[in-house]
Image (cartoon, rainbow, N blue to C red):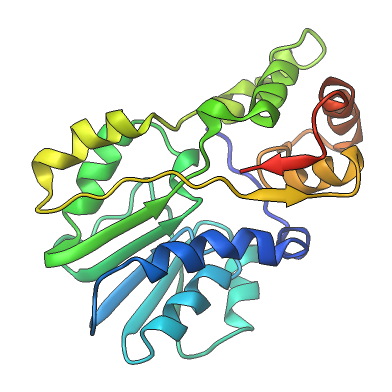
Length: 237
């Protein structure tokens, strides 16, 4: 899978919308005094700051594969251990009281093996908390997939990155329940009211609609814009 070159400035243009799921997930974590926390796929640090506010005494690590994202995160706090690293290969068993992953695991294949490996990094009585967009039920995600499979773009193999890697809640239950003392699953829909279709394209162009190694991205965005023009301006995620 080709790596995305992330634009932290564009990503943070919608910081409020992107951070709210982290706030909501952290609020439901029943840990009083975790000693060690890691934020997997921390991006520019907005989700990690949520963890710092919730648990100010914890040693917190933020890990991301993007150098640009980590450089931006380091500007926000020197009280967090910022690291460049890849979730696909990261493995530190039995070390953390809380493993937190907000909108990062859906870029990775084989979630059955992935979630089992990440659970092994949690200490006894620790928590693995993660959130992913429900891409299996998103019109915009389907539009991106359709464009990537269209004749004009198929040769660029965009589907290697735009393939849906998330699964239904029932599948995660079947994988995680036998490995967990307690398991909670829920779905939340966040509606983002955007001005127009161009704004929808901009919102997604900082994440899934960002081509890698293809030069200017405008042709891809125009293709997506044509495909998505009939969709609503209130985007669920």
